[in-house]
Length: 379
Image (cartoon, rainbow, N blue to C red; front, side):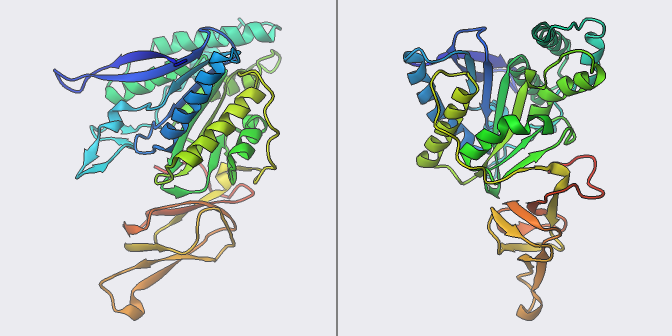
């Protein structure tokens, strides 16, 4: 059995051209729990597309056995705009080349408008409140008016995911060990998935800045919960997170098949799929605050030559690599790069030429850092 496929048309960039988003559907429309799965929103980050390819095989088999309890919608290539972007023969999928910015920033922020929309309408019935919130979120999204291709794509994805129970956004870093981003209220819900996937960091923030996809889905709920503490609005009315599936070059069938199996087992655990999953392995990490993670910046321009692999524990002051000036005499060519904090180095830039101030690595520390405010994510 194969999935049912929806083709959702998007504006074309010029007359005579078109774009569309492909969504695979499993289960019964309208059934709960409803799950949205997407990959390659940053269109050059493609490990998740292969993971969803293998997951769809498992979902089709499960549907054939009558094991799908809820409804699942899967967008294996969530960004057809970025998928077609290339400069000098290199794929450029993180930013819209027409000036539309980062594809995973600037989603519609409904925090204030949702709270106002449901004012005086909530009751003491949690299920009824969840249904009301979802209706109002979809209505508010329907009032949005995108202004360019990138914002049209973002609004389309947000509408497709906003009334789900669960949304997983699959990304990757340049070079990285597997890690997660989610809200602190959802850390426990995603702990098992993180353990099953072998995550080395589970980074949490109530507001990481600049409205990425997962937070555009969850933050309106959290603001409402805080605004009306006397009414039951469950924090798990919408569970969403970003999964960083290692690095851009970590694309192979064996790894993707294992990742797909881990997600499948977690969906069983959440009641989306029938069956008893195997127990999750011991967690490799505890949740830590995103404002406890620090970026390592290039102290000078030159060739980034790393010494420490992602997934390594480091101490403050450790030698993480060098910036090499190939034009300098050998005795003066290297500028050491040292770690600013102790913690887990979970990501690093691909070795190569970098300008001053470039992000070279990211280290997750156990506690919040003074001065880490505002936009906590990389550009």
